[in-house]
Structure formats: structure tokens, C-alpha cells
Length: 301
Image (cartoon, rainbow, N blue to C red):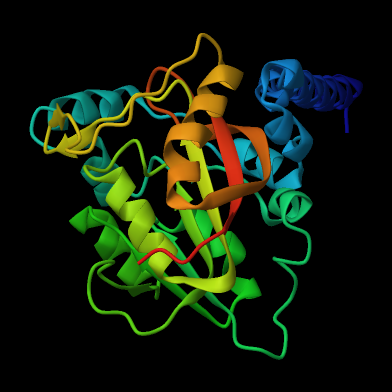
């Protein structure tokens, strides 16, 4: 082997090593910036909360599930962006996401939720435990929790997403069909601002909850409701007006005008980033989410 070829091989290896190191540094720096950006979504000024809510607040932080979700997001190409924009003239965003299997959401991990509701998400116990996820979307969030329950049921208004759920093996039910069973845990994650009758939906969920069950509700604030109808966005039939000049004030008012009249008590709550898989323009989008662990103070039917 000549000295020249050996030197070329060495330079090539060095170049590859430097390239890998540079890419790793860019990746780690990018992730660090993203992590620092997301940190603000966990912080709350408890002095602006009511006394009871301040006492029930639990500050969470990013965990491995959050980081894994971010790491698995892949950029969308220019062609996909153009196709997506074209289809938005005819179909809802949810339907397009369901058809292409994109637009995954991340709300909260089992570990984070266990901080809010200790022992609620342990491995299956001797008693049969049931979970109902209302508005489960593509089931990505539901999948994280199914191992803690004997049976998992889901509801989904969007037909495309409902088909996705069926393909994944979930039992898709109609929320308003006669249901004899009751559930230990019911999820309503970022659904109240996207359904036509949010108050009726909450009442129905309460009627399906075990006496000692828990309702897990996530809501984005500021509260900006609309209902998808194909490419259009319509106003909901039941209007919830939420006042307040800041995120904390929105939470205070929402609890007062929505949960309390329904006989629901906030056991614990937190603030988390509601992360959705992005598009051609951005890798992901984030909204400030409030996540509540609720228990019934009275039986509502």
C-alpha cells in the first residue's frame, strides 16, 4: 500500500469522524435549544391561581417519553407541504392527518401522570380496570397507557381517525350508545375546545365514571374553540366563555364555570406543553396545556 493511498484513507476517515462529530454537536445543540424552549411550558405563577388550585398544582418536567417523541419527529418535504395545503381546501386537518398517518400528538406520559395521580397508573391489579379515551385521535397517546388496564375503549368523531383506531385493535364505541359498564379512568385530552357540545360531553363522561374513578382532562389556554366541518371551522353549539388576562386566570375561571357546576373537584393539576407533529414549515407546534385530575363530588346522570 502506497504512502499516498494510506494518507488519503486516513484523511477520509478523519473527515468522516469530524462530520459525525459536527452533526452530533448540531443535533445536541438543537435538542438543547428545544428543551430550553419547552421548559417554560411547565412553569406557572401560583400567586395568580386561586388558593385551592395553587395547593393542587404539581410542577412537572420533561421526561424520556417527551424527548423520545421529539427525537422521532421527521421533517416534512416540500412536496408533502404542497399536497397538504392543496388537500386543506377539501378536507379537515384531522382527516388528512389520519389518512397519511401524521400529525401525532404528545400530551403527557405515564410517569408524568403518575406524579399527578399516584398509584392510578400502576401495573394491572387483581381487579379488572377499564379505560375510556374520548376523542382518542390516532391512538398514539392511548397506546402509552393501555398496559395499565385490562380493557381500553375509545371514541372518535372523525371517521378517518376512527378507522385508524380500529386498525390498531382498539375497541371503538359510540359515546352516546347505551353503555352498561363504567370506567375507572376516562381521558378527555384536548377535546373540549374541538367538539360542538363540550358541557354535554363532560356530563356524559361523569355518568360513565366509577364512583371512585378519575377523569383526566387536558385543555389549552387561551381557550379558542371551534368544530371541524370538512375544510371549514364552525362555532360550537355550547359556548364556554373563559375570561382572564393570563394563563393562570383562564384556569381559575374555567374551573369555576365548567368543572364546579358539574360537581367535579380538581384533585391535582399541572401545566404541560401540548406538542403536535409539525409540517413543512416547522418540525412541531406547541401550545400551553392544563391537565386536570378530577373526581366527582356528586353523581351526575
